[in-house]
Length: 183
View 1 (cartoon, rainbow, N blue to C red):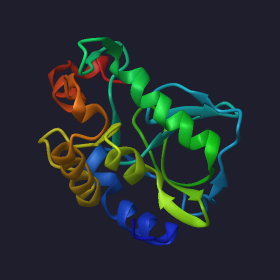
View 2 (view 1 turned 90 degrees about the vertical axis):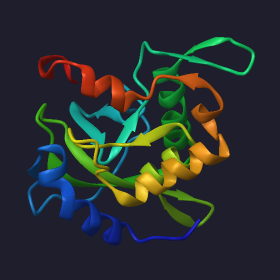
View 3 (view 1 turned 90 degrees about the horizontal axis):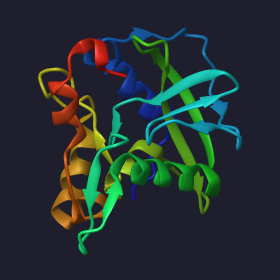
View 4 (view 1 turned 60 degrees about the horizontal axis):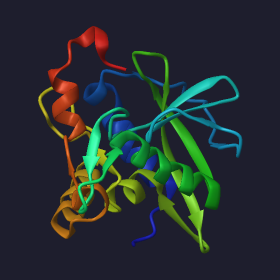
Protein backbone atom coordinates (compact mmCIF):
# COMPACT_ATOMS: atom_id res chain seq x y z
CA UNK A 1 0.00 0.00 0.00
CA UNK A 2 1.28 3.44 -0.93
CA UNK A 3 2.46 5.52 2.02
CA UNK A 4 0.55 8.76 2.27
CA UNK A 5 1.20 11.58 4.69
CA UNK A 6 -1.53 12.45 7.16
CA UNK A 7 -1.23 16.10 6.09
CA UNK A 8 -2.05 15.19 2.48
CA UNK A 9 -5.05 13.15 3.57
CA UNK A 10 -6.29 16.00 5.74
CA UNK A 11 -5.99 18.48 2.88
CA UNK A 12 -7.95 16.18 0.57
CA UNK A 13 -10.63 15.42 3.15
CA UNK A 14 -11.05 19.03 4.27
CA UNK A 15 -11.67 20.15 0.71
CA UNK A 16 -14.86 18.06 0.69
CA UNK A 17 -15.87 18.21 4.36
CA UNK A 18 -18.48 20.95 4.35
CA UNK A 19 -20.40 20.17 1.17
CA UNK A 20 -20.25 16.39 1.19
CA UNK A 21 -21.63 15.47 4.59
CA UNK A 22 -23.31 18.70 5.67
CA UNK A 23 -20.62 19.34 8.23
CA UNK A 24 -19.24 22.53 9.62
CA UNK A 25 -15.46 23.05 9.42
CA UNK A 26 -13.60 22.24 12.61
CA UNK A 27 -11.50 24.89 14.23
CA UNK A 28 -8.40 25.67 12.20
CA UNK A 29 -6.41 25.33 15.40
CA UNK A 30 -7.56 21.76 16.14
CA UNK A 31 -4.41 19.76 16.72
CA UNK A 32 -3.84 16.12 15.79
CA UNK A 33 -4.29 13.74 18.72
CA UNK A 34 -3.32 10.21 19.61
CA UNK A 35 -6.32 7.95 20.14
CA UNK A 36 -6.20 6.47 23.64
CA UNK A 37 -6.27 2.72 24.20
CA UNK A 38 -9.37 3.16 26.39
CA UNK A 39 -11.79 4.37 23.69
CA UNK A 40 -15.41 3.25 23.74
CA UNK A 41 -16.16 1.88 20.28
CA UNK A 42 -19.74 2.56 19.23
CA UNK A 43 -19.68 1.41 15.59
CA UNK A 44 -17.07 0.49 13.02
CA UNK A 45 -16.56 4.19 12.25
CA UNK A 46 -17.49 6.01 15.48
CA UNK A 47 -16.06 6.05 19.00
CA UNK A 48 -16.06 8.03 22.22
CA UNK A 49 -12.77 9.04 23.80
CA UNK A 50 -12.52 11.12 26.97
CA UNK A 51 -16.20 12.10 26.67
CA UNK A 52 -15.89 13.29 23.05
CA UNK A 53 -17.55 11.65 20.05
CA UNK A 54 -15.43 10.99 16.93
CA UNK A 55 -16.33 9.64 13.48
CA UNK A 56 -14.06 8.67 10.59
CA UNK A 57 -14.63 11.11 7.76
CA UNK A 58 -15.76 9.51 4.50
CA UNK A 59 -16.17 6.05 6.05
CA UNK A 60 -19.41 4.15 6.60
CA UNK A 61 -19.32 0.95 8.62
CA UNK A 62 -21.86 -1.81 8.33
CA UNK A 63 -24.88 -1.05 10.53
CA UNK A 64 -25.16 -2.76 13.88
CA UNK A 65 -28.18 -5.03 14.05
CA UNK A 66 -28.11 -5.85 10.34
CA UNK A 67 -27.29 -9.39 9.26
CA UNK A 68 -24.40 -10.71 7.20
CA UNK A 69 -24.46 -14.33 6.09
CA UNK A 70 -21.09 -16.06 5.81
CA UNK A 71 -20.30 -18.78 3.23
CA UNK A 72 -21.78 -21.43 5.55
CA UNK A 73 -25.03 -19.49 6.03
CA UNK A 74 -24.12 -18.44 9.57
CA UNK A 75 -25.71 -15.16 10.61
CA UNK A 76 -23.38 -12.47 11.93
CA UNK A 77 -24.17 -8.96 13.12
CA UNK A 78 -22.72 -6.98 10.21
CA UNK A 79 -22.06 -3.89 12.33
CA UNK A 80 -20.21 -5.92 14.93
CA UNK A 81 -17.97 -7.35 12.18
CA UNK A 82 -17.06 -3.78 11.12
CA UNK A 83 -16.57 -2.77 14.74
CA UNK A 84 -14.25 -5.73 15.41
CA UNK A 85 -11.93 -4.65 12.61
CA UNK A 86 -11.77 -1.06 13.85
CA UNK A 87 -11.03 -2.45 17.33
CA UNK A 88 -8.25 -4.63 15.92
CA UNK A 89 -6.57 -1.63 14.29
CA UNK A 90 -6.92 0.48 17.44
CA UNK A 91 -5.45 -2.30 19.58
CA UNK A 92 -2.48 -3.11 17.31
CA UNK A 93 -1.44 0.31 16.05
CA UNK A 94 -0.79 3.80 17.32
CA UNK A 95 -3.58 5.85 15.75
CA UNK A 96 -3.30 9.61 15.31
CA UNK A 97 -6.30 11.62 14.13
CA UNK A 98 -6.79 15.10 12.77
CA UNK A 99 -10.15 16.78 13.42
CA UNK A 100 -11.56 18.28 10.22
CA UNK A 101 -15.23 19.11 10.79
CA UNK A 102 -18.22 18.78 13.09
CA UNK A 103 -21.08 16.47 12.14
CA UNK A 104 -24.70 17.48 12.63
CA UNK A 105 -24.81 15.32 15.78
CA UNK A 106 -21.72 17.16 17.15
CA UNK A 107 -19.40 14.23 16.51
CA UNK A 108 -16.02 15.39 15.28
CA UNK A 109 -15.14 14.09 11.84
CA UNK A 110 -11.53 12.94 11.78
CA UNK A 111 -8.99 11.60 9.32
CA UNK A 112 -6.69 9.10 11.01
CA UNK A 113 -3.38 7.45 10.35
CA UNK A 114 -2.32 4.14 11.91
CA UNK A 115 1.36 3.38 12.44
CA UNK A 116 1.94 -0.25 11.39
CA UNK A 117 5.35 -1.81 10.79
CA UNK A 118 7.06 1.54 10.48
CA UNK A 119 4.54 2.81 7.89
CA UNK A 120 1.60 5.13 8.38
CA UNK A 121 -1.59 4.03 6.65
CA UNK A 122 -4.88 5.84 6.34
CA UNK A 123 -7.30 4.14 8.74
CA UNK A 124 -10.32 4.63 6.47
CA UNK A 125 -8.53 3.15 3.48
CA UNK A 126 -7.37 0.18 5.57
CA UNK A 127 -10.90 -0.62 6.74
CA UNK A 128 -12.49 -0.15 3.32
CA UNK A 129 -9.77 -1.95 1.34
CA UNK A 130 -10.06 -4.94 3.68
CA UNK A 131 -13.82 -5.02 3.01
CA UNK A 132 -15.01 -4.15 6.52
CA UNK A 133 -16.24 -0.60 5.85
CA UNK A 134 -17.52 1.37 2.87
CA UNK A 135 -17.05 4.70 1.16
CA UNK A 136 -19.55 7.17 2.63
CA UNK A 137 -21.78 9.03 0.19
CA UNK A 138 -23.87 12.13 0.22
CA UNK A 139 -27.66 12.03 -0.17
CA UNK A 140 -27.26 11.83 -3.97
CA UNK A 141 -25.05 8.72 -3.58
CA UNK A 142 -21.90 10.56 -4.63
CA UNK A 143 -18.82 9.26 -2.84
CA UNK A 144 -17.41 11.67 -0.28
CA UNK A 145 -13.89 10.42 -1.12
CA UNK A 146 -12.89 9.12 -4.52
CA UNK A 147 -9.97 7.24 -2.96
CA UNK A 148 -12.31 5.43 -0.60
CA UNK A 149 -14.66 4.56 -3.46
CA UNK A 150 -11.76 2.99 -5.39
CA UNK A 151 -10.78 0.99 -2.28
CA UNK A 152 -14.39 -0.22 -1.92
CA UNK A 153 -14.67 -1.26 -5.57
CA UNK A 154 -11.38 -3.17 -5.32
CA UNK A 155 -12.49 -4.96 -2.13
CA UNK A 156 -15.81 -5.86 -3.77
CA UNK A 157 -14.07 -7.21 -6.90
CA UNK A 158 -11.75 -9.36 -4.76
CA UNK A 159 -14.63 -10.42 -2.45
CA UNK A 160 -12.63 -9.30 0.59
CA UNK A 161 -14.13 -9.06 4.06
CA UNK A 162 -17.86 -8.52 4.09
CA UNK A 163 -17.91 -8.73 0.30
CA UNK A 164 -17.41 -12.49 0.69
CA UNK A 165 -20.76 -12.56 2.53
CA UNK A 166 -24.35 -11.64 1.83
CA UNK A 167 -25.33 -8.38 3.52
CA UNK A 168 -27.34 -5.21 2.98
CA UNK A 169 -25.08 -2.34 1.97
CA UNK A 170 -25.38 0.33 4.68
CA UNK A 171 -25.61 3.24 2.24
CA UNK A 172 -28.84 1.90 0.75
CA UNK A 173 -30.27 1.35 4.22
CA UNK A 174 -29.30 4.82 5.45
CA UNK A 175 -30.72 6.59 2.41
CA UNK A 176 -34.08 4.86 2.99
CA UNK A 177 -34.32 6.07 6.61
CA UNK A 178 -36.26 9.17 7.57
CA UNK A 179 -33.83 11.98 8.47
CA UNK A 180 -34.78 11.99 12.16
CA UNK A 181 -33.59 8.37 12.52
CA UNK A 182 -30.13 8.87 11.03
CA UNK A 183 -27.32 8.52 13.59
